[in-house]
Structure formats: C-alpha cells, structure tokens
Image 1: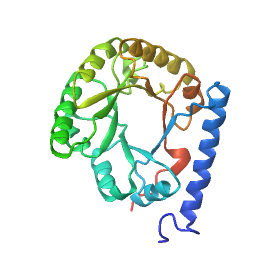
Image 2 (image 1 turned 180 degrees about the vertical axis):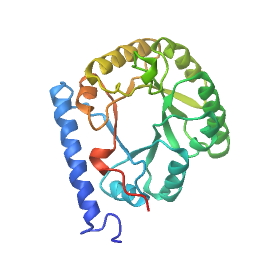
Image 3 (image 1 turned 90 degrees about the vertical axis):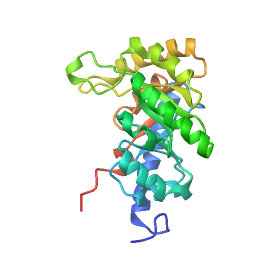
Image 4 (image 1 turned 30 degrees about the vertical axis):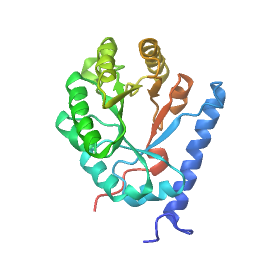
Length: 245
C-alpha cells in the first residue's frame, strides 16, 4: 500500500477531492446564512474506515474526527496518537464505557441522561488526577422526534436544563452545548430550528454553552442556516462503508 498521504496515493487524492467538495458546500452555506466569517467546526466521522484513512485526512488538514463505537475508536486513537487529532464520540454511549471513552475523547456529543453524566464525571476526574487531561466537553443530545416509536436517542427538550446543571457542576466536565440528529423522513429545517430554540434557552442559563452539534452529509446546509457550530460529516468525505475482509 502507498504510504497514507504520500504524493500519488490514489486514496489520498480521492479524499482530497471529497473533502474539498464538502468544504465548498460549508463555505457556500455559511455565506448564504450570513455567517461567512463564522464557519462551523468540521468533524469527519470515520466509523468503519481504517486508521490509514484517518492518517490521510490528518495530512490533508483535518483536525477533528468522530467515532460512534468505543472499541473501534479506542484502537484508532491509540494507533494515531502522533497525529494530534481531537476525537469526538458521537454515538449512543453505555455508562460502562465511560472509563474507556475519557481516555481518548475530547468531547462526547451524546450525553442524554443523568447516569451517563455521573459516569463520565467520575471517569474524567480519575483521568484528570492521573494524566491532567482537560475537562471533557459534553454536548447534550436532544430528541427532536415527535413519535417515540422512531426515537433515535436523546433527552426530552424539557430535561435539558437539569442535565446542563449536572454537567456544569461537575469539575471534570465542560458543558459545550446541544446536539441532535434530524428525524428520518422529514425536512431537517424545522428540526434544526427547534434545536436552535433549545440552544438559546440553554445559553440564557449557561452563556458559554454555545455549541450546536448538528448537520450530516445530507443536511449540513439546513444545520448551518440554524446556527450549527459543529458538523458531523461521514459518507460525503469517506465514501461508502468499506467491505469487510
């Protein structure tokens, strides 16, 4: 295999083209939303893709990557420690995985219940005591579903204030803001508008918690229009999931 990032590596050139196309979409969407000088952070979601691809992305200037399975993320983070990447955990998280996740993650985007806040706070405090790590950034995942039968995770909007207070009072955690996934089969705009309102209410109580993690490959323009500060883009940069074996 050609060294990741080396001149002439076909996969690196493919990723460069895909990354450039997404960055052009982000720039255009930000300009259309009247926020040309306020571009959101691009988190490239690298689940299922090999560490070599992440190394290629780092060479291309990517600084933030996202994973949704702890076992896969932990292995990649250990393998790629020299790349200096910020790792974002963006999937549903079991409390028993908190101890592992805080070893590598700069942020968790799926905090949606008090038990998880407590588990992350305890684990992050232990890491702070031993390694001096920075506080773990926590985004409260908000459910934007009206139908509980199609629930994709997240806290009820009415519970955000209680969760926020719990995070804000944990010394090992940092309240970053809110996160959501647009409901399936519905236009994303109204959902992201609702998330923006939840964010505004949160910021009124916690002025530093301005983060809005929203927007994926198919709906990043709508997310930017409604104030997204962090985008989670996977397939439009990395392509389809590679075959197993």
